Image 1 (tube, rainbow, N blue to C red):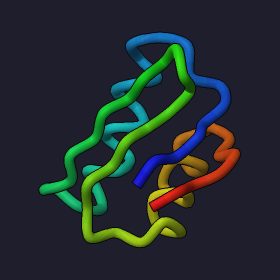
Image 2 (tube, one colour):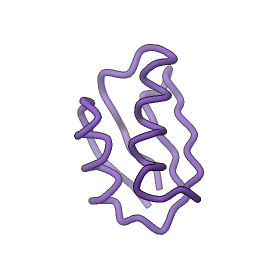
Image 3 (tube, rainbow, N blue to C red):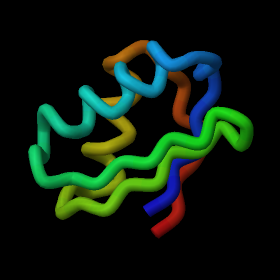
Length: 66
């Protein structure tokens, strides 16, 4: 799934978002594209779970697509 995220601007943001998702699913594959404001996630988590994890990490989710 792809998640559009606002507020990411640095390596710390990449680590924070990746950690938030992998804490819920240790096997998740997470790729953060800072320039595009996009997080690509391969996981068994639902879009709602991924969005909640990113929001809890302090970022704004603008939308998801599967």
